[in-house]
Image 1 (cartoon, rainbow, N blue to C red):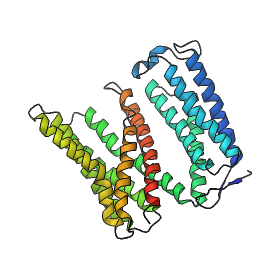
Image 2 (cartoon, rainbow, N blue to C red; image 1 turned 120 degrees about the vertical axis):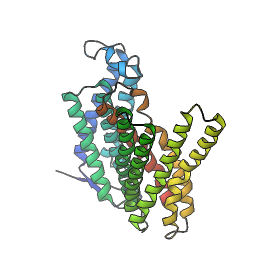
Image 3 (cartoon, rainbow, N blue to C red; image 1 turned 90 degrees about the vertical axis):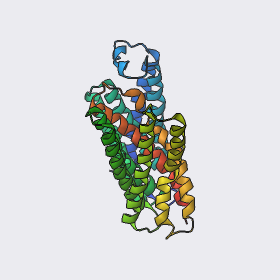
Length: 336
């Protein structure tokens, strides 16, 4: 297969199969934009669309907004990626990752919300995964520190988030007591922190003691989850004064903002003079990224199957991880 070279101003060149990326993204773009227009034009459903009743498990009342999301976000990112890749843009690798991620998340979320899986889902999921694979491969070969960071941290946090998300879903459906649920979620938060810390330590452009960095990140994440669960328990008790709950909430917010970055600072301060700035950048990253982790909330309820529930929360976690990786990269650049 013929390959091409895309120049990135942040580092060395990246080699990748340009023609295949263009073909896949054009296929995705045409399909998504046409499908979006169809959803918008026939917002109440027609012969070619599923019945409006399939939206009963979603916050949508017709197909208008899903059509906007499908055509504008999925189709738009795919079309932009095709153009940038064809023109050998410096940001073509980033566009490939974004378009592949958008299509994959859309298909996973659609299948989970509609509670069905069909051949078209499999085809478009394959296209999305292929684009992600091509983007990750190109990012890895590029030698660009930003690519390495964004890919590693997104994958690490996306995978790590499955632990507390799964713990929350499973504990809520298994009849565990409140204390046991809280303990399970905090333990899962330790796992999330360790996986995130390992991914960050591996991708950092400065040398750190990776295991120590990962363990400190786990402790910081555990502290954050413990504070969240404490406030949740206090807020759910009628015997606890509202003022105490408010104070605990403020304290938990502080722990949430600086817990992980502060824990990582303990290791970073031995390797760079700019370590203190990392706490602020990490806090900003969580402020911007964390709301994306709740993207699944409007689409799940007590009747949602466990598989669909986990898939939707995984999509939210992946969105959060990507945004967090983009913001924290700005902090990494300033560590030196």
